[in-house]
Amino acid sequence: MHRQKTKFSHRVNRVFSHRANGMAKALERRGIRATYELHDRVLSNRKSRRTFAHDRPELDEVQERIVSEVDGRGYSVVTFGDLFPEAHWREIASQRDRFVAETEADLAAGGENVRVREGKEFVVRLHSYGAELGLDDPWFRACASRRMLDVANAYLQMWSKLEYVDVWYSVPQPPGAQRVSSQRWHRDYNDKHLLKAFLYLVDVDEEMGPFQYVPGSQPGGPYADAWAWRPLGENYPTEEELEERIPRSASHAFIGPQATLIFCNTAGFHRGGFSTTKPRILATATYSSPASLASLTQASYRFTGSLDELDAPTRFALS
Ligand SMILES: O=C(O)CCC(=O)C(=O)O
Image 1 (spheres, helix red, strand yellow):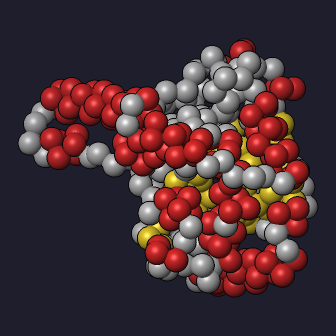
Image 2 (tube, helix red, strand yellow):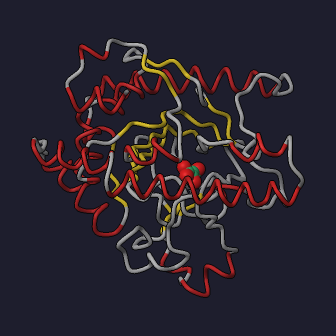
């Protein structure tokens, strides 16, 4: 779901042979990895860690629990109401209803106008990339709030960037369909300092493609060495390969009612969205380190509000 910043090899492709393009790609990967490491160890993340350490947020009991659970096993589950008032949930539920009605009308008319990305046509997106978002968008407002941002920053131990915000409609797959893309076990390539939030907007049962995770596969966890995370890593083992190293019983499927809110470091193994019955609707957000934005990813949106009116960690996260 994330885009690389550098497209050097695409440009080379127009000029050089296939072999030269292979070399250009390898060089490009090396450059991207080196840039990530440099920003992680020396440049932007170091600065972000210092700024965070200088003025740590005070967390309440729920926020503390989330941070310590993600730290220990890679994920934590709460409900939206543990962090936000009921009125905020109602706004998000209205946003869901409008999105579902529009998506289903578009799909019924042939699906020409739905926002999907190549290779992941099973996910219809409310925003996708290039969105213009302000605090009037209720899910964006939740993600930009200190309730969520302080959790992300405390987990990552640095000021983080809110890199991606969206609402997804996972289209039920026809009989016989095979898992593809993020429906398969994988580690996200874009950062090891990563926190994703998934808010279920409908009840999700085992047939609706629940989010699944291997607890302990996050960097630092007991399964971290299995196809270990690295920048731009291509970590999509087959089901059989994964099971040779990690028993099926070690993975967890997040079945739950609407308003279930999952926080997870998806540099660990995860998959989801393979519904075979009803559409799975969820809202999602990604907090990553500045090193990721410097080398591997692009923010999915432009903040339309006034940055000057935000406090310092929020301004940093949204810019
Ligand atoms: O749709 C899902 O449950 C999985 C999403 C995913 O793989 C991701 O956000 O990286």
